[in-house]
Image 1 (cartoon, helix red, strand yellow):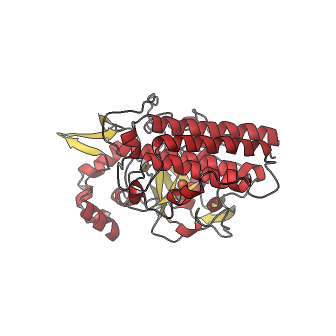
Image 2 (cartoon, helix red, strand yellow):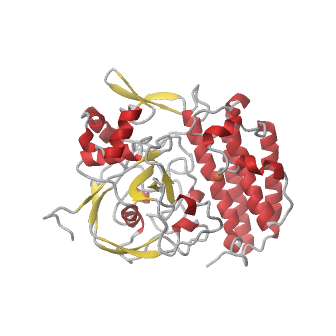
Image 3 (cartoon, rainbow, N blue to C red):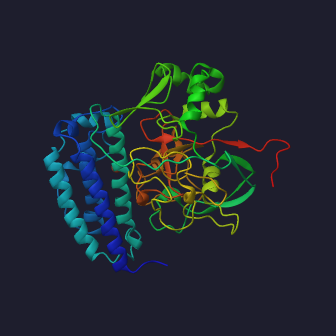
Length: 439
Ligand SMILES: [Fe+2]
């Protein structure tokens, strides 16, 4: 049942405000020099992200939905992500931080005016507020990217958040997912992006999947066992990358004496054993899995473990049900500046008992980036379609830095298999062995 326009308008306005508060906090936390600097060739200057957020909002909400005249047509090209690589953006004649702040505020005023006047139905772009939902998600996605830039920045800590609560894991390490069909993707979720559509049946044989993401403690056993020095565990491509880059541990880890330390948003701390490992690339995740006698789950296996309800046979919106995430369900929304220890969210588990699928760390899946059967690009090819078939691997579930408005159990993310500046971790899966009970 779709909500009344007035109700939807209020919800959209609140989500726009929430994303803007986050963008503001992430950019106000550092000085002008930090805003215009390039903290890594993998990332844009923070001030580019900020003005790009405004530029997309202007394009879709002010110009397209609202039919209004452009505010700053001369800057469109500067903030077109397809025209300039991240590493080249620092040398563009970008808006200054003050200009960027003024620009995004002016765009927001106009977008809110458009929101007041849009019927939020009729045209597909406006139906159930889709364009507004897309822009909310876009800003939140860039906020997560800006958070990753903060992690790459050197210098003393500028971001602060409470610690997640302590927890320990008490359940079984793996869960058996029985063979059979489930519904992957969605045709019903109003703000789902084109690549999550349409809903379609997928049949899978039975498999085991880890009940929680692989922890730092588990991952360090692989490191200590010489996992990074043994080509047996790595794919040919992974080994070539590991060797060329000299990888010896997850990004931001360093060993002092017998102890692994990590740098997290400017804080140096011993690596906590009970937290999901993060800042590993696909190749590292796959190598660990092989060392552990397992493999990475496919994207379909991840989604079935997250959504399939054996009681009803239907697929849920989230592992815990259809209700929106709360802080009891998952570590989302940058409430904390780190993943939570495994066992922290028993209420967020799926019906089969698979935990911490949403939030904490993005989870690498052993699937390339492909469209679902019946895929239709909407509202533009550059959102997903132009990336299909590239060397990408799929990531699922969101991280502690993903906002609840920007992630669902059907949400699909993708990146190059060598990337690890993102908040990426993984869990393992394995086939059912001969003689193992399959229920
Ligand atoms: Fe963007």
